[in-house]
Length: 189
Image (cartoon, rainbow, N blue to C red; front, side):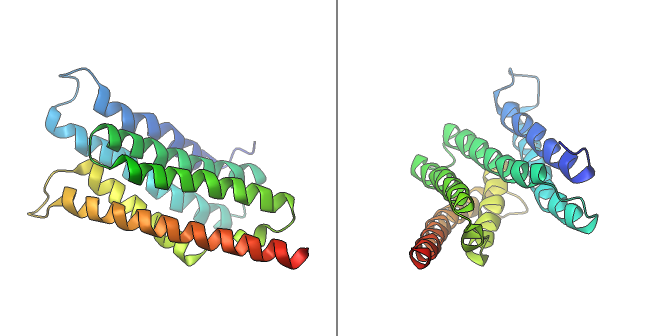
C-alpha cells in the first residue's frame, strides 16, 4: 500500500465514517442535543470533500495507484451506506430509498469487477449521470444529517426531496451501466 497524501485522505474519509454515525448514538449529555446534527454533518461533509480532493491530488501529483483506485470507491460506498442506514434509523430517509441506493452501489461495483475481468472496464466507466447521482446523494445526505432549518430554509424537506431525486438518478445510472455492459458483451461475442 503506497503511503501518499491521496491515500491518506481516503483513509481519513474511512475514519470519519464512525464519527459521523457514532455522534447520534453517544450517551445523553456527551454532546449537546442541538449540536449532534451539526457534528454529524461536518464529519460527513469533510469526508465528502476528501472524496473529490484525493482523486484530484492523485492525478495532480502523479500519485495514482492500484491500491488508491481500489480503496477510493470502497470508502465512498461505505460512507454513503452508513449515512443512509443512520438516516433510516432516525426516520429521515425511507428504507426503500436506502435499499435502492445501497443495492445499486453493490450491483454496479460487482458489474465493474466482472467487466474488468472480461477486459471491458471502459464500457462501465463513470458517466455524467453517475456523477450527477453522486452529487445529488452527497448534498441530500448533508441536508438530511443537518435536518434543522437554516436561515429560514426547510433543510429537512429539501433534503427529503433531493434524496428521492438521487434515488431516481441511481436507478437511471444503474440502467445505463447495465445497458453499456450488455452492449459491450454482445459486441465481443
